Image 1 (tube, rainbow, N blue to C red):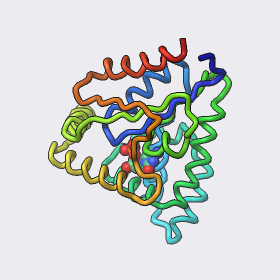
Image 2: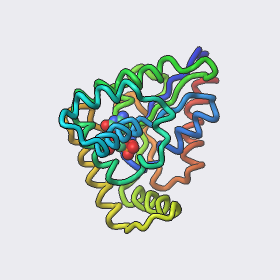
Image 3: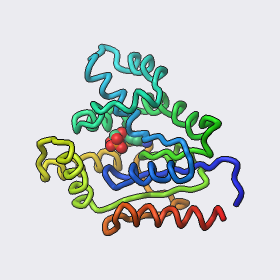
Image 4: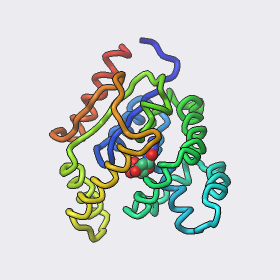
Length: 215
Ligand code: DC
């Protein structure tokens, strides 16, 4: 398959390894990468700081000024921000604000890139439905909690495994049962279960599928 620009879409529950794999794909194929969860986290953080009376009006204003650089801030990584993000992500009006920015990245990446890779919860099902490659990456919740636990510990954060497991399960429930754009595997996506795979082997599995179709 000869492609002008590649579009890769990935969905996953939190801490399943999708972010790491996406970054590796971006590097390997020279693609623009966006972790779309960061967009919801960014809006959540702004809300937490500003506490505006009219949340939607405020978010509408803020959402017009989002750019990839703003999404890099380390203060978006906390559990509290993640939880507020999952709450605002339920609102269809917020999802619509975010959609435009995501599609712009996916369909019109800057010239220097060969395409795009986006990961999130509704990328394969809603945002880039015509992606050339679609993956649904998952792992069981204990393994995901353990990975998140080690990641946060490495950052010097005081964390308890059971609390992380609890918050991962809670967020899974929120993301899988909400009314709009709930997290789900689509029929046209490939399932990658990373429970018993190292990062490297998970990446190689995805890469093999892409290369087989590209070559
Ligand atoms: O991937 P993450 O943990 O950074 O995502 C934070 C929250 O954002 C997640 O619980 C649900 C929401 N989200 C979403 O609704 N749709 C996306 N495409 C990405 C994230």
